Length: 276
Image 1 (tube, rainbow, N blue to C red):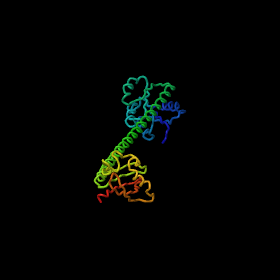
Image 2 (image 1 turned 30 degrees about the vertical axis):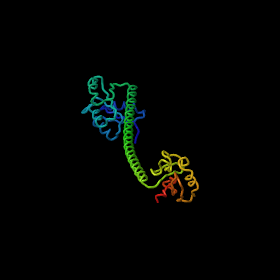
Image 3 (image 1 turned 45 degrees about the vertical axis):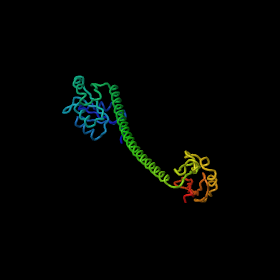
Image 4 (image 1 turned 120 degrees about the vertical axis):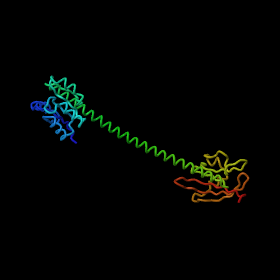
């Protein structure tokens, strides 16, 4: 992409074009010239983008305002300046809005003032382009953010759905545990009570563990004899059977070493021997 600032000068008088060319020859612009409105339109087509057009008002066949109006319709980003003699000032000012003209410069012009006008017009063009690019980027970012929000909403919905399913599964598993004619207690690798069923909690000395001990450490929740058996349980064993008495009842304790999805612990299953 060529980053040069192209300026098209349009006038049916060759001396005017030469004067404009000499005025800007030392500036950092690429200068183009045309002697009529039609030629100016063709020149822009062949060299687009053209950042700035300076056009005379009085030209045969197509005057400057008509020409600049077509430039505005086809290349709205191009900044448009019209040159005119004082006799045409009223007509030009009345027609400025038609061509969305940036500035009217009277003939004969002051070289320094025209240079400043052109410099400001180029700055105006660059600022507009930057604003359009920032607007485009902002629109893209907003679209990306909208997509991210939509994806996040879907992820939250999926996560919520999974959590609800997991909670239902846990509730179902707990209900199944509660229906078992066995006392079941789960202990994690830290020794905390993480699971127990209804049969393992009772009153009047019938309990394996006291009520409200879920989350407690096994040494506080379980009977000393049970803790002793756990402490002595061989590390290389996955299952062991022991007979003991708790709360005046005879039990057979089954210790199962558990390991699943990186989680380790023990499952204690108490079979009441009186019901065997």
